Image 1 (cartoon, rainbow, N blue to C red):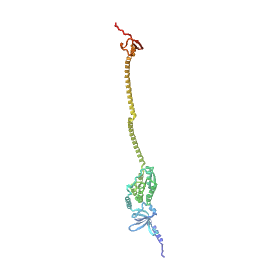
Image 2 (image 1 turned 180 degrees about the vertical axis):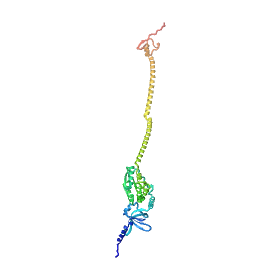
Image 3 (image 1 turned 60 degrees about the vertical axis):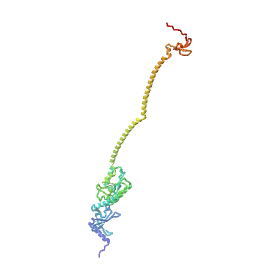
Image 4 (image 1 turned 180 degrees about the horizontal axis):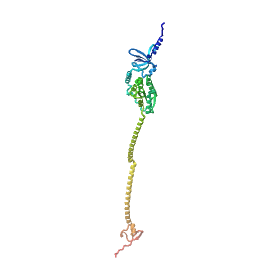
Length: 403
């Protein structure tokens, strides 16, 4: 009697045969990717083909998350995995657990194509890039919390600008899930408010840096409301993020140096400016002292007190001259008075009378008798002498006979 199997039984038998084959349990296949699709679950489905055949491929989400970048249609790859049967559809499939690009040509073409498209949109234009804040108070960092890049950034910021607060927005920096996480990390920093953002990771191959060549990351950096510094890879590495960012730094450490001022340089600059200010103030004060001295001297010359002093001195001189002149005049007048007094004394009748002379006045006419003919015999006259006055009667005139 012949054996009759069900479809499930034969499918299970074939699945067991395939999975028992050591060659098919760990095999490397080379081919071109087509019909690439990533489901909402994160699992990836595609076809690997060459000129003669094709095979359906499945890559679970856990595997896709480990890849630096996911393949695209047309990429030449080498994939490792196991071949088994998918019972529900009755087809054999290649379950991929590792992918390597076949050469760098395809990646470079993807890089250059995206670069050209974004450049044409103007996302690389210098005119849209913003200046960095000179003294940021809060610095956001988008990188892996386990990366050496984060330690380098923190060391530099602690040394250069310890006053700034650092806010880490953690993310994967490699693998297929990294671009979405980088975008979410940027958006998280926008909501908390920072002055500048550093997007960074250490060096690596083109595949390892590919998350920063993702279009979603590029557009998120371009849309950032605050300036973004890209510090991805080493100095020779360039990513799309470098071209879109407001400033590109060759390394994560250099990005930290660009983001924050050096406090030692600032202190030296402050000391230099203080010295210049001190010199300027000293020169200003010296000039003002000289000017004040000149104005004080001018004020001294123009001050009324000086004129009053000068007038007072002139008044004193004039007063002295007046006093001397008056004294001289009085002295002259005194001498003249003395002379006149002497003359008057000499002319004073009383003085003459004291010398024994007498003044005779006619009692009748009251005139001074100067000549014998001024009186007549028998006329009464008044005779004044030094000590008094008496009357006399004029005697007849007698002839004087000279002996």
